[in-house]
Length: 624
Image (cartoon, rainbow, N blue to C red; front, side, top):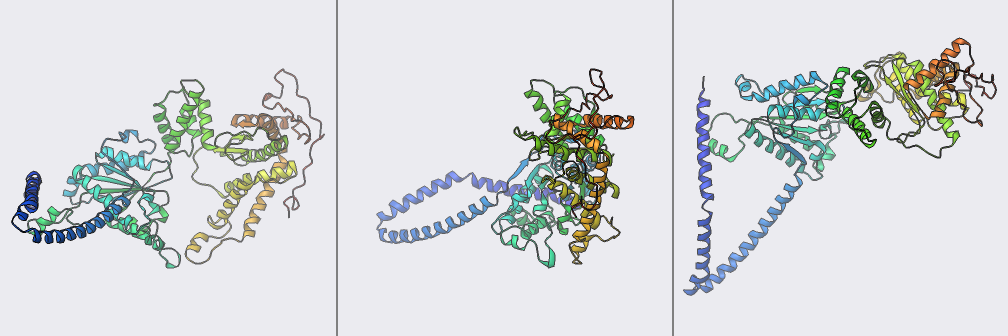
């Protein structure tokens, strides 16, 4: 049933149209106005002086000249300031009209649950009028949470395409300005443009990336506003306050026509604002101001996580269909990319295509895929051509300690690659990958991770009798895990969360550093004992690594299996050669069945000859 308001709206539209027609008619008379101005100028210049009014005219001209100069100076200053503010308030925003990107829900892969939530948003945007007739209010804000590369901005583009509405993309840091008030003008202009587009298309989406850069909490420690200093220069709390107002403004007439109609009493119903959906993305939701998260602003939150196994298969298949490739086992590719985001998968596939192209092939192979994974995870190879044999030996035993500890202490993960070829800034690497997604970790598994990190130093002391400077990241990782175990995860007999206590002003610092050191030393002793008991495995991996410089997962598995087979059969085991001896070929890869490729039996190693005796594990070996 039509209401009185519904009947009045066509009348208001007719009145507004009449006013627009009247003003348009005035603008079309500019030629006649120009003729009148020219005739007036001629009369003022030639006719009036002919009747003896030159003196009076001269005085009037002087007064008019002074007034004109004064008016020009004022007008110039106003235009200068307006132009300056207009230029400074221009935000780096990309306005995308419906259909420009060409991406829709058919292109969004890997997270079907997120896609379902997005489809509901599109349904609301498409049926705004019907939804409002039911008495509902359109969602004003959606916050997308998740790590970089999971497709948050891509999802917003898909929503705008499917809903057929404009899409504005802006990075939050670009909204800040060093001048007071400029940031506020920027936000007002953004939402003003969004509302104009919304009037034309029915709705509009404004996407703010990295919103944590401007939406951080305004209260820090000791009650001091965190945005106070930033507000002095046009950023900080001032920008956030303006954003809060624009996201949830009071209803008001937006243009002069509506205000004129209301002034004369023609328009009496409540003002309506064009629907603008603000979408924002962040991976630091915990730092956002609570005013942003309240209902009426970002009242709907969608978590966009990296895809799981099935999701990765879907993403990989989507991007593989766009390129030329050999036949692959999709399950194997999905296992290779555990923890990868859609952006990472797209990058790896493109890198594999580049590798195949430069090698003169029209389809990329699994080797190209592995090389692309390596470049993404480890960095480009930068071999050091003049590295001495001594340095290679040190790196080999350092990384062999990691590899053997990883292979034996943490069966849920697999040693993927061990190398002493420089990748990026790392001289050597021991890389492991989980066999499947892991969402939890037990205390025993965390302690195993600590032992794996400390295994490099344990191998240095056991097999080289030295301590190297390449353990920086190892000690850093082990110390972080130890701190978290003791202070955050309650694995030392206490249930107190130290970070929470520090935020509440009840203390800071957490465990005594000596307690952390005690935990690290205990795990160091355990991993040192483990490596000493499996010294044949460490020697086999290290010496083979010296020959090949790099070992993959299959090669490491074969080495370990061959050593364990020899150990069970009572055959001679690998022994560490003298430091000054050339690298020996253990032939562990070629003789996986205990025989050389030519069928002869392997030569037994001299029992103990040239082998370095290891120190007994105890307090002295730990440096106490």
